[in-house]
Length: 137
Image (cartoon, rainbow, N blue to C red; front, side, top):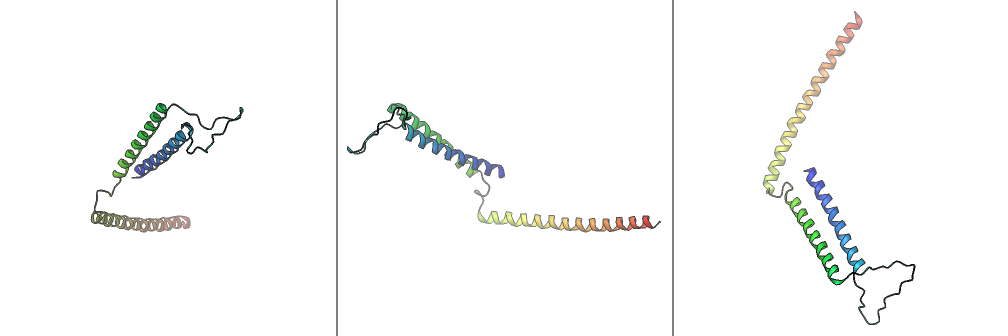
């Protein structure tokens, strides 16, 4: 499941990057139009780079369409990743049953661990006794 969550996070990051790219494209390549007759488009100084690099309307619309398709495709990929996460096809009862089974497995594993620790301690005591016996002789 960790890999799916990582893929989902990376896809979300990519989607946000695509959103930023789409906003940048729209901001950078729109045509300069006035909204009201009193609006003014500032003249650029010779050493000042242009803030907007207008492109012809067909190219602009084609760019917007491509960016929109990319956003939709990425969103569909994210939807697919979400649908493959565990738990979405299981009812609450099924999930609770899985949790109970996992708790039982965990309890059994903990009991085995405790037994292994006791056995280790016993072996260490016997080994310590042998070492002391060898030192005495």
